[in-house]
Length: 194
Image 1: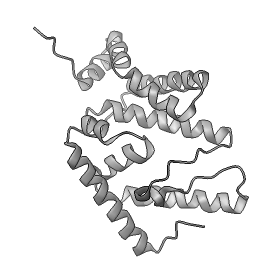
Image 2: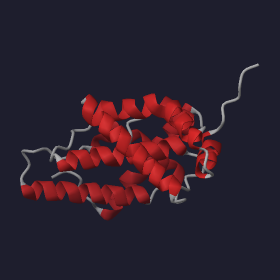
Image 3: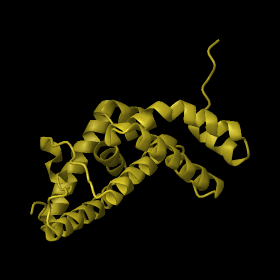
Image 4: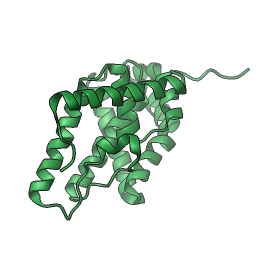
């Protein structure tokens, strides 16, 4: 008989209740996906190792302080922590990576590079902040898919697995999110190119 996999949410609960082994199970279960995500952005094994460790130090601190409330969506939450640490790494090293440019994500092509003037960099940061604020205005289901796709670089197959919806539903939510973003951008007359 096949063994039933303990859900992430239960492992989190067990760990918070004092079962140290539950965290090891969670790390083993998601290690390749989380590490692969970090390495795909950093492309340096030593730095990726450090960020992976820092991610789980933050996870442990949050779980130990009882301030985790992601309603069972453990992996997307850990991915967000890893993503923020990657951004911090690039900020410290003054190098923001250029994100992949595809037609549907052209409104996100606002990352800075080292050759930018201070003025342009400030504009670019302002644009990024504006975008984050706009994304906050989206309905939760659309926001979730958008964040996973744009900021966590997950495939629609991965998004569908993580959110428990079909790939078509995930694609639909992404499409609506982008349409809504464009509407909000038009409404606020935000200019996203400098």
